[in-house]
Length: 381
Image 1 (tube, rainbow, N blue to C red):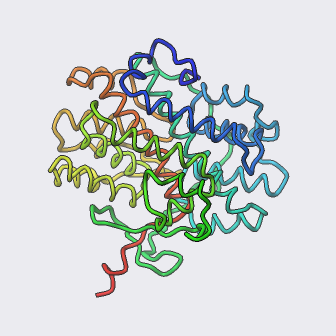
Image 2 (tube, helix red, strand yellow; image 1 turned 135 degrees about the vertical axis):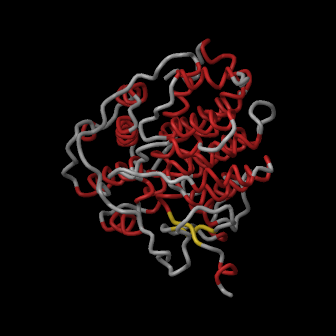
């Protein structure tokens, strides 16, 4: 991989501008694939290769094959083993159509013998590889080249042709948002999170930089603490790092990615932050209100509406972030040229790539492990 312990000259300037993002990305890779995990290493690389194939990243697909991807996961046919088949089907689902995942999709995993720790690890793997694919694409695009592509698996996912659940209630009966909003939402998990009293020192440390122990989301992710610790560091480096892209535009990119991936919860958080930083409520809301027609895999068939009515700079940022967020990223060197012509330098472009790519990660965790709900106080009157 080009993002490796020996970073090539093509991104040396970017590493100099944003070294912590690159270093923590490497730390996350090491934590996921080189630390002891509840799923053996060959399967992890096999699942990662599947993610790379769905998302068209030839570089990652070749990399994980070379790292010893399990032979049972190399073809297009689903494995015969019931547990392994359930895991592969879940990888397919949350890679391709994360917004179509439901509580029922999580329910079939324990029935097949999958543990809560394995469920969280699998979500982290799919989410991290989705982030890494876009970081590598960004690397190629910033160097002026089009990323090399690979064919997707020749099979349908379990959600193909499914409609999104817009029932308005969570599995626990809480009121669920069905439209995009800048109002504050809460999130309910489908997988049991450790209680505060059960957390180890390592688990608490894994998200100490992001939240307190009363956050059910971070307690859930702490089931894989080594990955969460690196992820927390990347999050802070991408969104709080000094210099580079204005904070408002990093948050705008996060909101755009969340809209493409159809993550109402993440879009609410980061549109609100984009509005706070930019004071452009109506422009941010215009992104949230954009109508996106979707295909049988719940992928947008056109991204044009997202940038309608924006000024030249925000239009270019939105178009790039949206294109990088599609299942098989469709951002182009020409879009980078357009952004450079508008005055964005390498550090700003790297921030734009990083903030967009990170939400390929964040959205897939939120969408695969739980669902948003309105705060009780907002619906009790």
